[in-house]
Image 1 (cartoon, helix red, strand yellow):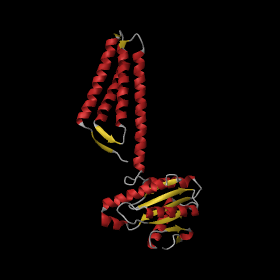
Image 2 (image 1 turned 180 degrees about the vertical axis):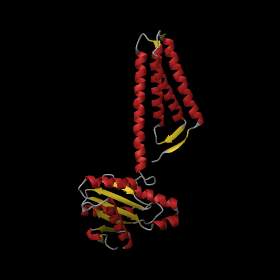
Image 3 (image 1 turned 90 degrees about the vertical axis):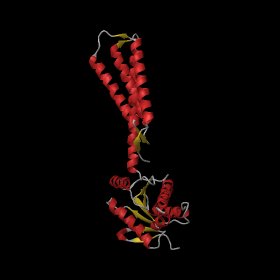
Image 4 (image 1 turned 45 degrees about the vertical axis):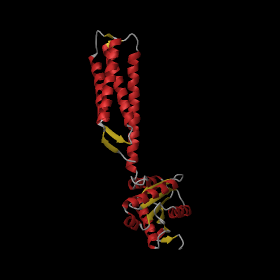
Length: 301
């Protein structure tokens, strides 16, 4: 997911602005024709309502000039138009008198609906922005920045152990050299989808932390449980190579958090275990134990 901002089509922009202007003009002219002119006009309220409507119109024109893929621009335009119409009706209510309060109530209602629509668009924009900031663009997993913040918060707030499974793809440079970087990106996206599906019903997150490096983080996981999950992940990758590759494997390292351990040392131990797996023959799981010991878990083939 990503923002794609571009200049809007000129024809569409002019069409939207023209329709907005014409509809607003027709609406205010109709109201003026149906009412009778007030003897006294509250120029303060009139100026405030007219200025509000004009600002909404300017914002509408500005928003119509750009296209933002992923953002709900049509809802933004609708919210601005409704608010503009509501402000226009409220302004006309200061100029003409109605035998019935229908138009003044309608103006307040349109302004309210417009404000609620704009609030919903703003909320969606914030959620979208957070998602983009926390997501790896290529694999659609969590990115390293979010991953580290997540671990920091968990270790600060919980006394339960946290397990990290570091995954380092084997021979990935060779894949890039033989098939090209575009194919390498395809492989990484494939791994991302495998990990996302694997973590769908598990308590934790899957992240891409480096070029061909990934990490799985599990909440309140025991050592036997984590090792079982790590072996399942190793087999999942080995048994599901992407199209175009006969074989794809990963070296896996496991570390369980210790008392008062920092995010840096926990991740370093998991990464060290993954490196140990790679140095020991690749396609295996290793556990980073206490006292800086690392042991292979996967038996030799």
